[in-house]
Length: 179
Image (cartoon, rainbow, N blue to C red; front, top):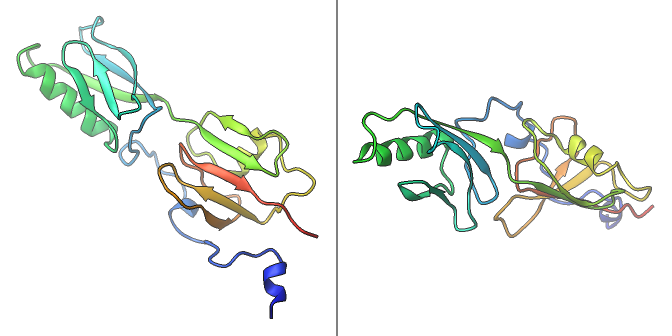
């Protein structure tokens, strides 16, 4: 009975859930955080438009209106806040669009050939992430991957499937097999 732990299958292995669901467009649900870059376009105001980064304190620093809290908010929510701030004494009926131009990176470590930090792309899977890290090392455990979500203290073990999705800011660890 004690041999099951030696077989390399961790207890509490996650095999279903949001990470195994097909990716939707993600625009409405994606929450901004430090390290994300957004492209702000204000119609007929090229001097106010541009690319801005979410700072480490979770704010966007924008011309005229200053700091806008962005951490944990959707792109739609932040665009509405910018539009309201600009419409409060700066511009008459501003038209604002906002989109993510660069997601915060994710990290791969453990039994891969090139561990490190990598740029996130929409609909990225754990297998894509491992490929960016130049594949498994010869001693890699290939059935389980450990993921720690950005801001979380603990990592969770997931069954490695082609559908397992990676999120921006994740830390992915590939464990070592023992035999």
